[in-house]
Length: 92
Image (cartoon, one colour):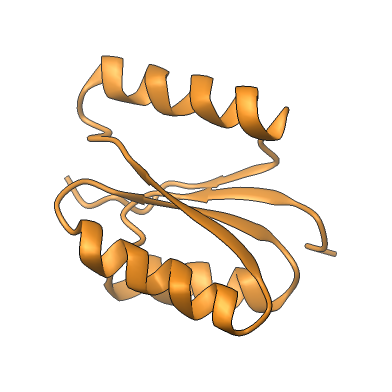
């Protein structure tokens, strides 16, 4: 059901966002791991997903800043051509 879906998980560098990203990746989705403050932790999530054979990428955006969100979506559409699901987990 999630195979080949492109999923953005905001606030995915730790906690519920991390767990969600890992779960979705195990079910075949490509995960875009969004972070604001924790680049190293976000990269660790991506590394875990890739180690398990999944597909993932880290992307910075402060979801409280409109310009950051626009830039993030522009990047996603340019590089993935679509976005199937957004998990809005960022805790602001």
